Image 1 (tube, one colour):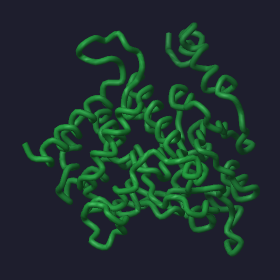
Image 2 (cartoon, helix red, strand yellow):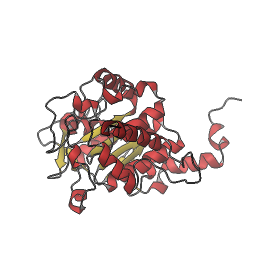
Image 3 (cartoon, helix red, strand yellow):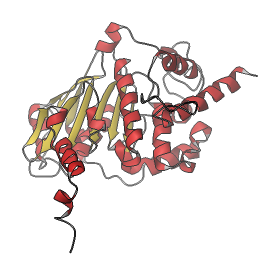
Length: 323
């Protein structure tokens, strides 16, 4: 059996494991989510990344390649467990207003309190940041702007993705300056839930290993993307990823994001899910009518409302149900 066939089978096996967050077929006794967590999974990822795998990168002939990397897999030779210095070099230290920019304070999105606070105060970023808030609070606007300012496709994917449908993102990224960490990875990926269908169509048009995503369920395709794209150290931004995922899928997502952070990546997530918001060690920002406030997961209104609803559903449903 050739090396390529062995790697391809290992790749398929790993994707199945990511999609099965609890236990396995030989015994469902374990409640520990799988999906890239642990030493053996990291070793599999290193081996898998030595083979061409990313159709986005394969379609860009002049994409940068690390010394010794296989053709079509730029940077694959760098996939490894980072040392202490690598972990300290996260891609971004801070997001702030570009001194040369003069955004109109009376025009959207500057009228959104959280966006106005970002422009006024800047936003320091740690290893993991979670944005939580009601619809219209500015979560997605901020995440999209960071992605675009970093050079990622605002409709999802990496900086190599060339697809576009209808631009719906705000011009906020044009007014931002990213304070980068010297020597940190410049790789990144943006998972934007509302535009994933268009991204899958684009990837399918390129040929390669991602042409099957439309044949999967919504949640399965998300988990497939997580297992296939979210591996190398870099910046990973996710806008409401829970929209495609079951409860167990959300738990698996948290496990995968936690592993990314542990191996030197930086994560920024906008979410309505109390499960995703529970990402261990993340800075939690609650967005509202006065901007954002740093808070604890347990103190989020989102968490408290979910707990109250599960305790007594009619306490909420009586306000919306007709007699």
